[in-house]
Amino acid sequence: MRDKIIPALDVQTIEELNFLIQELKGEASIVKIGMELYYSFDNDVIKRLKDNNFKIFLDLKLHDIPNTVHKAAKTLAKNGVDILNVHAAGGIEMMNAALAGFKTENEQGILIGVTQLTSTSTEMMNNELLIAGEVQDIVLKYAENVKTAGLAGIVCSAQEVSSVKEKLGADFQCITPGIRPKGISADDQKRIMTPLQAIRNGSDYLVIGRAITKAPSPRQAYLDILKEIENE
Ligand code: C5P
Image 1 (tube, rainbow, N blue to C red):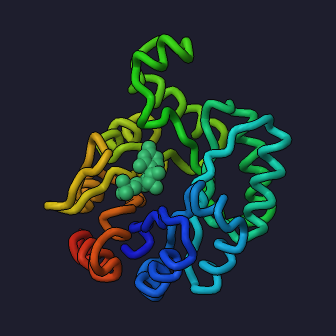
Image 2 (cartoon, rainbow, N blue to C red):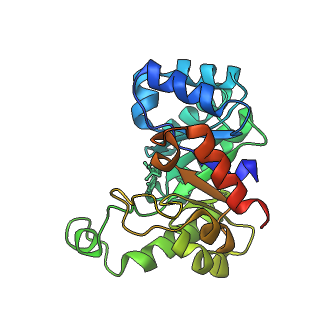
């Protein structure tokens, strides 16, 4: 179960990072590095976390021409990234190229597709991006493309897991943010689920940021969540 909880280390200072490393060391197995942390410290942050025995989910949402993404994914795998994501909007050829690059350096690595961002509304998608239809349908179509390209799964809301798995199979991995234990503020997340609900819905990995990182004791918050899902 430890592999299923991925604390999102959304901090930008070395002091905050060191604090979270000390708190989560020996407990969490995988941690997520987002853009703000990665662009603050580059590969030093990967090395530092690897040295403390964490596996790395690097959330950079790559999107460029296939050749560029291929090389980027290869380089990141070489630098020790275990889970990486790319935008499905880049198309099947781009995702395929990313996968080939990533796997060259990390055979066990997991490449994930990002479908539509949760900040995208149907109105914005229809009127600005000129993509017709409902966001939900586009998410499923993009997820299908992700599978066709050979990637392991997608990032999605825990509420979408059952429809995604119904269409693409139980093995298709769903990494779900928007997780809040009972009694914890939703912050800016619109559709939240508790860790237990998300696991029961079939989530493969729970990405959990503030409920862990902003807790008085991140270690205790992590252990409480682990206890909640442990018997599932
Ligand atoms: O603090 P919180 O648990 O809301 O953090 C969720 C993490 O998941 C953040 O790092 C956020 O960037 C990420 N994420 C998200 N929604 C998505 C994709 C990623 O909240 N659709």
